Image (tube, rainbow, N blue to C red; front, top):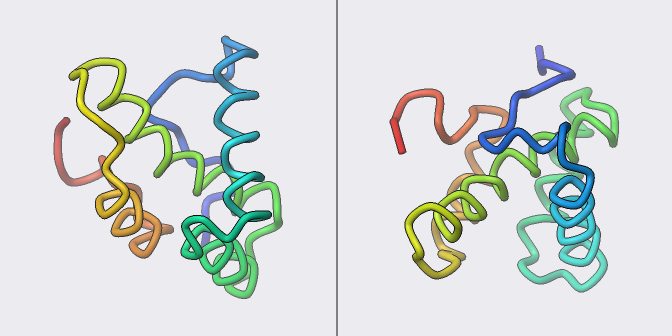
Length: 99
């Protein structure tokens, strides 16, 4: 069963600007099919029983890993890692490894 409230790596609920940036980025990725795996993941999670909101929250977990890396480690966005994390959902990218 898919958890309806996955926890993101970044605590975005307390920061509306970060929350909006993450979800705007996801909606843009879905709209633009860039990367295509974002929309595919949304549809796959919904087909597995997640609501659209829950599926977007899972995708936000994967994207928050990339934001964390950019902000904390001054590293560039790693699309390959992001896609791997999307493909692994609903397993969260930081459940088994520490960043």
